[in-house]
Image 1 (cartoon, rainbow, N blue to C red):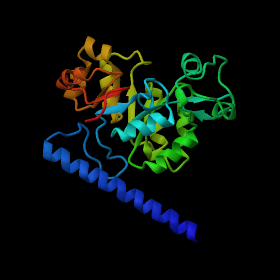
Image 2: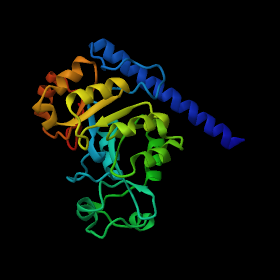
Image 3: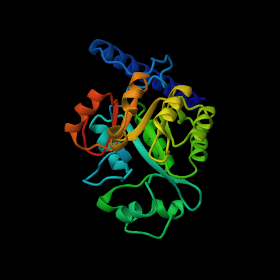
Image 4: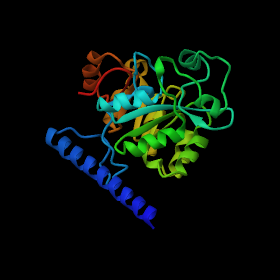
Length: 275
């Protein structure tokens, strides 16, 4: 009975925390006259604030990038990041852990190049610079302690299968999920994800196709590279249709105003710190 009461209290606290966070943010953007391009939604989890800065791979940590480490999350959370793009990869025993890839990144962070390990082996490795690697369960624990944080997924393989696994937990609504093609959009929606980003780095879609998908599925945002944004009219066209756009990966703070002037809403970054 006591455990049940504790869980109910935690649930009520989480709901209140999200409500207050959303309410204070909405009051501030109304005061400043800046609005997210998508319509406001009423439920607390879907009404997330616009991610002007997104900590890429958890954000830079101790001079390193792509660490997806506990220290990256903690240090960048302390710097006022609340949106964290996180890479998830499968281990040899089909567990999800936080790492960009089992090739160059594995070598850079762990001095290994022997392919995906078993999850327990991965957990016991020593990461460079004294950083701490994480499993998906570790990420859930971190989210429980940081209920105002949101995770943007970057899952290299078996994306929908990974999203199914996350959707079966109590943490689904902490995740803004990235999909890589049209075939993944509806399955992600069917799993209950309310905020879906179509990222274009794998898809060879022309501007008309991107515009169609963004409107057809009411996507949370479109993510693209600076190069894609610079070479054509897509950024302007998405702006004209009221679709949010995020750019990756930008580490020069002086570049942000020009992109914002052109209509970019959010930026994946390793080292730019929120003000």
